[in-house]
Amino acid sequence: MAVTFSNLHTESGLKSLNDFLSGKSYISGNKLTKDDIKVYAAVLKNPGDSFPNVSKWYNSVSSQLATSFPGKAVGVGFGGNAAPAESAKAKAADDDDDLDLFGDETEEEKKAAEERESSKKSAKKKESGKSSVLLDVKPWDDETDMKKLEEAVRSVEMPGLLWGASKLVAVGYGIKKLQIMLTIVDDLVSVDTLIEEHLTVEPRNEYIQSCDIVAFNKI
Image (cartoon, rainbow, N blue to C red; front, side, top):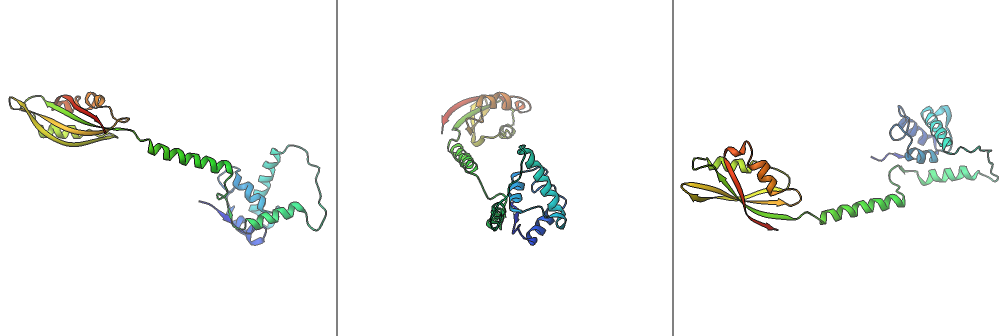
């Protein structure tokens, strides 16, 4: 959630920042981030003992920025009514009276976000194909409980598998087989794996002797 600071060039703004930094070392998390740099740019100078939390934070950011610019500074001065650097910071503070730490994106960040969004849309359009399968499930004998056999079949659940309509078909000698429809997502479900690793192994092989693919059609 974005954090907003206002008027950091005024005492009221500094007081708000001072309260926010109570018990904190940095604006976001426990390391220096670009959020600290943005807020640092809006604070005209170290406020000193009047705002101890801000002062401690300001010194910490200053010292870490110093290591990024190892050259020896000799100091510069500006003529005129106001120091340009100070005026620029004051202007930045005015422009950022409502400073949204997460609202400003660079062109690179915007481009990356657009590419990610485009990739997601492309992935949605390129969905895996589906197939409709008709399966024969055969019992061991005429004493097999066909209701429990069907329950055993439908108890197989996995992503991309949807069981459909079923019926019992007479085979002969009082034996019936279960004929059942299923829809699969091709990239997620292999019918051979479904049969060999789920339907014809324990505990389902108590009821199921074998399975045959009767029809296989792409949707």
